[in-house]
Length: 488
Image 1 (cartoon, rainbow, N blue to C red):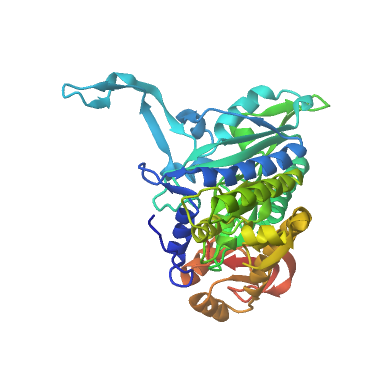
Image 2 (cartoon, rainbow, N blue to C red):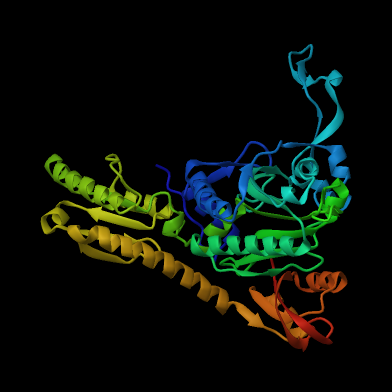
């Protein structure tokens, strides 16, 4: 078998990321430009996101729906400010039929041109809100709380697996409320859901807050974000939640009669997270040996490697492996035994390391005699010998330790690479020579944000608090503290 090398992070971070994906067998580039094939190991991570984030979304009262992938162009025209942000990335369907020409080649049938062009959804606000206008007539119809798991198409020029592809998977929540305050409460509630999921399940620490005017979602009143720091110290926007105000309601005439029989516009929110979360998971935890997964995100949490030389040894080893696998599964730990007898134990160790499985258990003939097995944790590569009877309890505790330790390690990295800077010269010098997050006071404006980005490559990530200081750009008094960083 061909043995591929994982490029060390310090040598070439971008290539390291792609090598980890390849060696963990998560995804590959499709024959379609800018798209990806998500393989079973990669899709299992998406299923963990769907299962756990999906449950958390439902616990807040939202229900799942599905809307068409095609959006009439006329609907997009109703919210031009919103659509402008996606216009250059939109895929347009103009015809609905192919036919064979005289050379027996497929061609577009000119007679099949659509009366109205349709757009392959870059996001679903417009088509959903056309329905909202029919669903809402009275205050009794509110709130509307829905969520959709779907695919999205944005014809990206520069793509990278999971982080940015022309087609990707995501969930998008959309709600309608009677008042601004209810919408604001909803937007912040869902931001917390994202933060809780990413930190608790993915073990990725976050900084969260409001986006600047220049960085907010097109058409939104306010945008809130969760921002993660990758191991190259660059920022990754991992999810966003938007208070849309009544802008879309006015564009789509979504109104209701209140208790006083007065006509009012609804207030709306939208929020979403995508397969980009898988990219965040990879880049936060993985190392030069391959993928590293927190137990709560791993489809298989424990892999057992049986080791033998003779058939007699095999019989006794397999019997013990089967018993331990059964005992672990009774404890709710997803476990698999690698019985591939055409591979050496060393190859198996390396193979499962690259796939990021949290715990490996090695059992050979001598282990059977001693009634002890070697238990190895993937995140630290630490090994210890554990009596068979104690393995279920030991591994269960180990899962909690690994999950906690991975979060602490990433949190320490985030803290160690976040700095307070008070003047623009030091700010420029920092981003010229380093990477990381910078906390600084700033009197936000689109003009200064553009100049900051031009001078340093850094952009505002989010507002994190109020106080008294001097604007990092102008030096004038400022009351808002922001986080800046160079992002993906």
